[in-house]
Image (tube, rainbow, N blue to C red; front, side):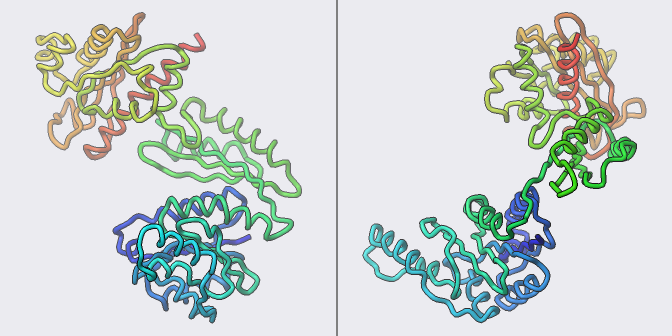
Length: 415
């Protein structure tokens, strides 16, 4: 079943607001087993809305429209639908009654722009008359068209609670079973990921997609249930094969972030972390604390940009800084040892580097970063040379620091 998505709004075509409703709809419709034929974003012009709708009816089996259902003068979707499909607007009495009941509670005025919400093209069926923004469905040329509000929270609720259930009963033999997983990969180039996956010679019913999301690579695996395959078994075997060839470069799946995975491992190991940051400027701590409950395993951190901070708060020897430089293997290690010792943490993580755009030298160019880990048993330092602008270098440095902690915890668990 092919579905076309149309998003309406001058705020979208002008770039003032990002179109998140279309991506939400596409993701959930695709996961439910539907093919997305096209996604269009158009402005609040009735003629353009009408043309887009009529074109979609010629090529898609169902249409999802978002936006233009509000009370202001530029909300023109209903007007455009009425004219394009020759369906005069009529009041939906249930929606109108709900609006007037609400008005009685807040005003003595009998007229309100809110009543515009109740006037729908003839044949429209409200999706949820009790909702603040009801949305509606039209059947035109034996094809369902769903009109949803442009406000993301309202649109998402109606799509999940109303649209998907209605679509599932539209075609009796439609197969809704889809198995889908996103593998989140770090520290392995997309070309190498592609090369390794190509060696697997996966079944033709297994669909693979590659999506670079700096500083990661996301690999999408989709298997849809067909008459002649065992989709569940095929999905499981494909997942195992991918995990085998990519190994620990896969740090998580679906919506798992690096910091969430590190947090889970720390919690499972009953270990606590403290962080000393220079070039990342607190980015590592910020990412870790984005996860609720992170106080269980993160004791805190020190942002030590100045050399004096490295010495006074982390105990790094001043002569060492002068002799080796703040960006060096030796200083990174002392930063990690210092933060672990002073905080009482099980693991000390330290990052020092040159994020640019200035500050680099021939021996230590921009992108030179040292990341150190200190534990009660041992310390070690890893040197990196990163490319990119200042923001990218800081971001990949923070990700690399978290990844080193992840790998340490994984090795610790099996040793």
